[in-house]
Image (cartoon, rainbow, N blue to C red; front, side, top):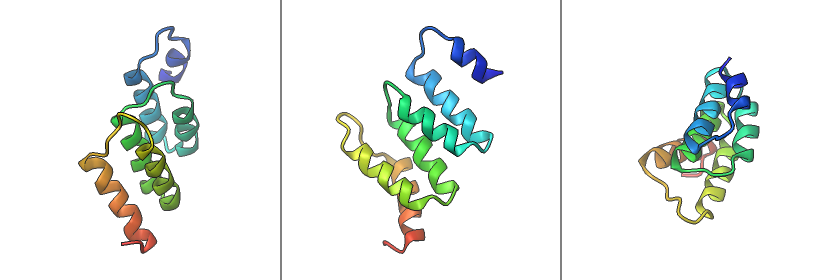
Length: 97
């Protein structure tokens, strides 16, 4: 499977990490995606948007907001339109708008 191939890869890039996180999400394994995300040595805006979006889709709205706040503290990572759509949805569900 793709997960076994990923485990055997010697030079994992942020793109390969993002792909495996997305794979877990597509399989409905948000917890595995989250655990993988936390171990990523490098994250870009796609990484953050992928996990925030997955948390929102899983109705884990408070967690999505917490991850967004964590993202904001990362140097060189700026929220984009995708981020804001997900966070607006999370806040709306929490009644925080």
